Image 1: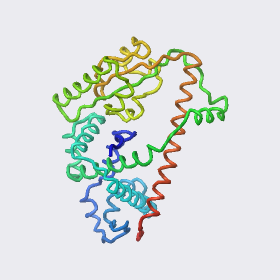
Image 2 (image 1 turned 135 degrees about the horizontal axis):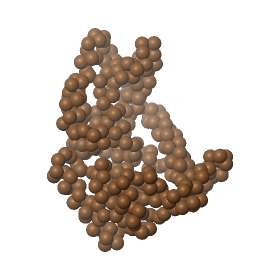
Image 3 (image 1 turned 90 degrees about the vertical axis):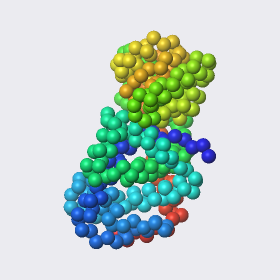
Image 4 (image 1 turned 120 degrees about the vertical axis):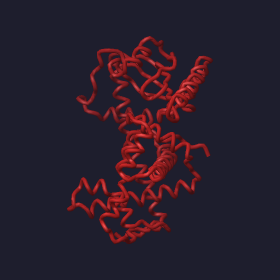
Length: 325
C-alpha cells in the first residue's frame, strides 16, 4: 500500500509537541504517586503515572485547581492516540527507523540546532534517545494514519470557494495589491541526516529532478513524486506572493523567470529547492486570487477538523473503552 507522506503541519511544531510531552520520568517518581489503572482501551491499560507524566506540562501551566480537568483532557487524547495507533497496525502502516532519524534531523534543522545538541538537551531533562525516538515514531505513525484516512477525504471544490466568497461582506474583500503577485510551486530536497555527505546527497536528488524538468517532465508531477515538503501532495503549490514576501535569494531567482519557467537548484535555509513561476498576477486579478486562497484554506481546515472528529468518534464506537479516573 502506497501511503501519503507526513501531512502538513510543521516539523517545528511536531518537535515542540514532543519536547513538551516528554516530561522527565524521574519527576513522576519524585511525586510518590500510588499507581493504578485509569483507563483501559481494548486490551491496553493506561496507568495514573503514565497519565501524570504526559500531562505534566499542562498541569504546570494550569495550576492545582484545574488538575482534574487537565488530567481528563489529556487522558482523552491518550485514548485517541491508542485507537489511531491500533488503526495503523490494522492497515499495516509502518514507520522505519530511517524515517525516524530523518525526521529528527529535520526537527533539529528547523529549530536551528543539530540532532546531537537536541539529544543532549533532552538528556539533561532526563529523556534518553530511545524514549524520544519511540514517541517520535508513534507521532509519525499517527500522523500518517490521519493523513491516509482523513486528509485524503477532504475536498474543497472551486464551487465551494465561490459560494463562500459570495457570502463575504464587502469589507472582507481585499484591495488589489500595488505590485505583482508571483504564483509559485516548489520542490524541496532536505538533507537526510547531518554533515556534508547528507547535503551532497540532497543536492544530487535536486539536480536529478532539475534534469527531468529540463527534459520536459511536468513540474507538479515531479513535486508530488520527490518533494520532501508536505506541499508535494498538491504538486508543490505554494501560493501567491508579493516580492516583499520572498527572501532575497528566492526573489532574485523568481523575478527573472518567464511564466511557466523553473529555476535552477537554489540553496535555502530549508534545503535545496527548485521553484516554478506558474503565473504573475496584477491588480484586481491578484486580489481575487489572494481572496480565493484565503477562503480555500479556511474551508479546508474546517472540513478537515470535522472529518477528523467524525473519524475518531467512529473509532471510539468500535472500541471497548473504560475510564477509571
